[in-house]
Image (cartoon, rainbow, N blue to C red; front, side, top):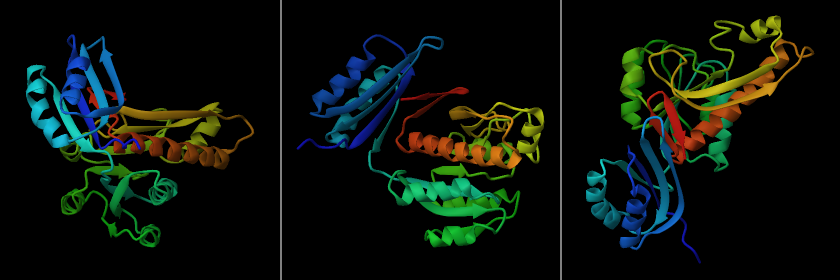
Length: 274
């Protein structure tokens, strides 16, 4: 019976001839078997990205590959395939994204280890408790408490599941590439309260959602996933909101799946997903 992949190798470096061959030959030399491989050469920046899942002795491969990577100026990482990502979820009052994440984790569709749920309102304590996850009320703008919770739990990933609080540039930069946010696609057109009422008043025909990494530029970080749905004049603000929330959960779920499976490469203000 064929073994399932045991590790994921991620490589990023300046493009040059023979990179795919160097990686594959290094794996072959250590008797590793490639189960899945994808690569992308960005012709605009001249940068190369590769993701490989393989079976074999990762320790022996790492010892051999280190010099190969150095020679080609590669940035590389190795992860166990079945490693669950240690995650902190941050919430405010809307529960649709949290509810979906908890369901996806419980059903085994998202390989996340949710260590805690933190909220700047106390309305989701019971929902977290029912899932057996500690809930922490942290007052708005108390970033010291958030940082302490991240460090205490060892969370790698911070998910803003409709967390309605602006984070400081210092916090965003400290956890760059580790904070994922979800928001409706009306931004920056319809800012502030009641965006679906604003959208209805303008007669929008398409609504959607965007999941992105958080940066100090509000809602303008590198985009991970987006989706849209056509709407029409018969849909009032409440219906638009219902449709929008459904898209938000779907888009956030996909972004988290990409992250958990180590498929996202940050490249400036872009993402490469392999």
